Length: 234
Image (cartoon, rainbow, N blue to C red; front, top):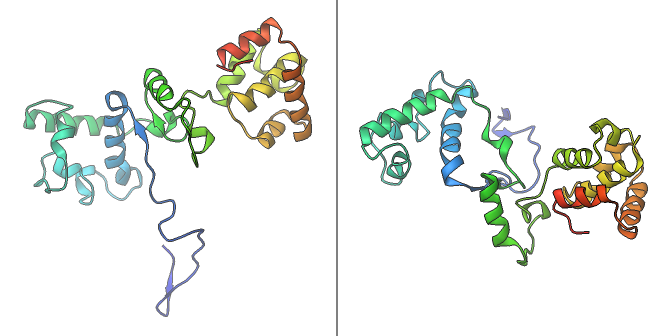
């Protein structure tokens, strides 16, 4: 919090309006990630060191969901508890155990794909079929492809197609493999031009030339395999 001096707030550095960046929504697969997110949210005060136990933080939904206080009219506790058991008391006990067991679990945010998708590969495929071919005006390109591979996944697929180590891509010792990796990082992973250039320690103009060269030449068997595993049409 910024210090207050003579009734004025000083030392604030921000961009945009007051609430810009405060809200974020995700498309979540209920079966695999909804409970994880609910647990993660109520454990945040403990992780931040604000309290020693989730039950001590009175501004979250934990106490009402765990049966430690009356449920406000606006809070939909039953929808969450029925994921544990149809008996309220049994569900509340299971919920308390579930939250307690998550204290040292990794953050579910590590599994977010395309900035807004959180779910299994099957879930991502279903969403991809829904959005494919749609006009996505003002939608970031990363959000338009739920099944888009990460840069690390692209590099692994290229290395596997050429049967070389990852280092042979990054140190450019295997010419065709590294050029295929450059091309697919741009097309499959949608990695920014400058980022790819820094990764391979070459100029952005060289990256663009490699892309054109790959597109103009007939693909080799290894390139065809890499394109297919990275879901890129040649």
